[in-house]
Every structure is written in C-alpha cells, then in structure tokens.
Length: 64
Image (cartoon, rainbow, N blue to C red; front, side):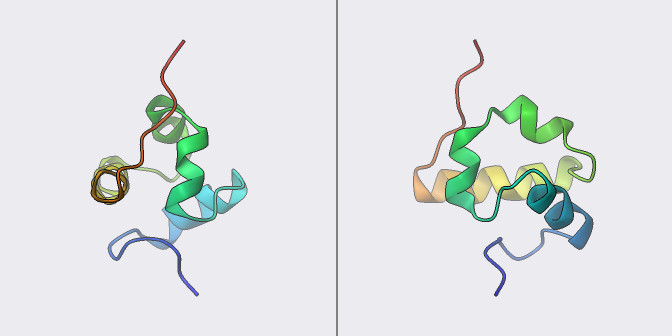
C-alpha cells in the first residue's frame, strides 16, 4: 500500500522510508529544510508532498 500522493517517485519514497517517514502525517515531525535535504527528494517531490500536506492541513515543524 502506497501512503504517498500520486507523482512521488520511487527514489523519493525510498528516501522517506530510510528517514522513517511512512505517510504524510509523519512529515509533521520534521522541518521543510530537513525534507529538502534528504537524498532523493527533488523539487518536484517536495512540491507534491507540500501540496498534499497543505490539502490535509498538515504543517512542517518550524525552524528554530
């Protein structure tokens, strides 16, 4: 079962799973910068994930 939005490529999904992030809700535990720095998360994957989070009302952790 894929818990990620359509359009997120396999390399990005592998990067997310390696970081122990398994669904959109998990992304609320990290910052946007942290997500962007994951090897395998490119601009397209970031934009797709951010858009899906916005639709659900999810937010990244604020940078300190």
